[in-house]
Length: 90
Image 1 (spheres, rainbow, N blue to C red):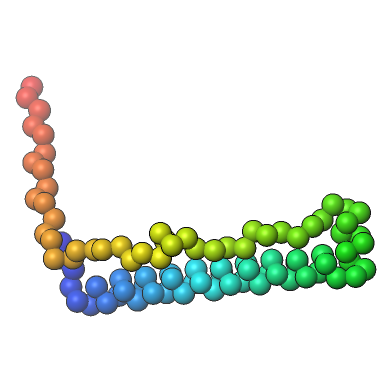
Image 2: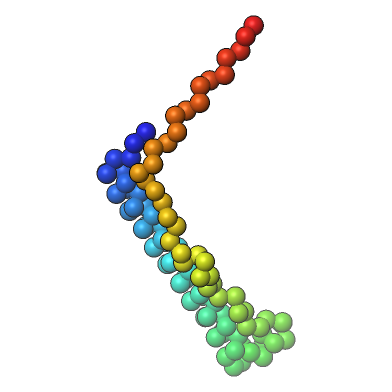
């Protein structure tokens, strides 16, 4: 099955959309964590948080350098021919 230019462009759009959704959710997570950390440190919340065992959470999402490397994809290679179906002798 060959990939037509239209299918390839659709794939690119889907990948870009997925990357954007991930970036939005990563930012939302980090913003929520920042709000939590600020809330826990504000007076008088800090008193109640201290008694209840709540403290700052340093678990901000950070991408590693390895995850920033763009994978190499070769769309010019043709797939191998499918293997012949095994025959059964009776």
